[in-house]
Amino acid sequence: MTAAAFNPQSPIGNQKSDEVVVSVRGLTKVFKDFWNRPKARAVDGVDFEVRQGEIFGLLGPNGSGKSTTIKLLLGLLNPTKGHIEVFGHSPRHVQTKSRIGYLPEESYLYRYLNSRETLDFFGNLFHLDKKDRDNRAEQLLDMVGLGRTQTRAVGEFSKGMQRRIGLAQALINDPDLVILDEPTAGLDPIGCREVKDLIIALARRGKTVILSSHLLSDVEDVCDRVVIYYGGKIQADGTLKELLAKPDSLRITTPVLSRETLEKVLAIIRHDISTGEVRVDNPTQNLESYFLDVVAKAKLAAQETSGAQSGARVAEYLRGSAGEKSAGEKVLKKLSLPPAAPTPNIAAGLAAPTADERKLAALAQPVAPAPQPENSAPQTEPAQPLDLSQAEKKLSSLLGGKK
Ligand SMILES: Nc1ncnc2c1ncn2[C@@H]1O[C@H](COP(=O)(O)OP(=O)(O)OP(=O)(O)O)[C@@H](O)[C@H]1O
Ligand SMILES: [Mg+2]
Image 1 (cartoon, helix red, strand yellow):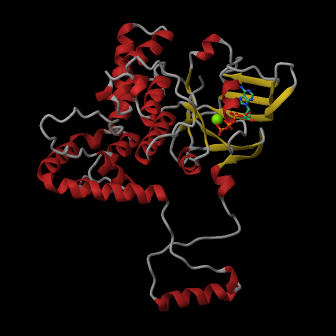
Image 2 (cartoon, helix red, strand yellow):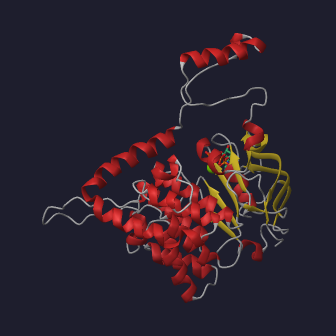
Image 3 (tube, protein in one colour):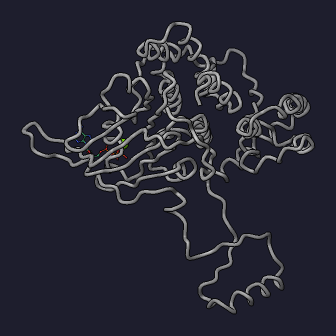
């Protein structure tokens, strides 16, 4: 692999290089019926390239050809026409397959295996030795928040929990290319945010990620580049900045201004521009940010009853290691800080966490369990929040020196 060059253009600071990981030229897939008559032209003359370290999004409405493209990239389907190279080889090349992790659109799990056995099974397929399998399974289960449910059969899992174990399974072979078909489908908003952060963490470590989704806000948050499909054809492609920028208008955001100041500013602007083209409004936040805010506030209110204990624990954690951490680790570390303790953070010379980071930090705090009546049925363990600081640590050790 070529040395990864840091690309300052990347909004999430991922490690990118010029190495082409996936190259697709004139890709076409026509599904045929029993008599070889064309049934559906699922992918139609598609071209794109994905480079090392990129997060690349396949967007499009239902039935537009996203999953078919993914199956072609994995060598699960044969193209009708066109050419695909993954790491410079055909997708059917065995060594190439061992460098890919795949989360399918539907969970294909053996329902009677528990999560640990599931990961052990997939680890075996990649010829990992027992020690590696155990080690990785434990770290991955912690990372996806299923550490406490590892003895339950995956057939009993909720949709979101199945997505989480699917994600862990996709990473068991420490893949260089991770292909995720609708990774956030079925996850609650907190789970979605966590998966997006995990995807960003993978890209920061130099992994290449291809994901499909029709959840546009998810794509907007993580992807460097996207293609938009309709009817099996690419209708638009480019970086999000290129696609979404409106170069012919300008937005200035300020705190609320007095009527007098606003009138002065508008008078200056109206001098050059006709009134109809000028708009003054209050910016709105997106629904995800609002949702995280509401849940974080609710959780914080519950914490006040046991504030002293959690406060002390966090302060110690803050003192621990901020000074020696890398920039990426600092950000992830900040995500697990409680919003109640910003002062020591600032005193230590670090930037205060942003509003979104504070919301996530609050969500990462445990809530005291409600007292259970005696003789009540045992509670099932839901998926635990993905521990981002832990996730980054686990990823570091899982991925070793590979960046
Ligand atoms: N095995 C198959 N046999 C016949 N037609 C198929 C097969 N798989 C997919 N198709 C057809 O190919 C087209 C593209 O399907 P595909 O699953 O790639 O869409 P998609 O973009 O992933 O949609 P969604 O968002 O619903 O997952 C659809 O018309 C679908 O019916
Ligand atoms: Mg699909």
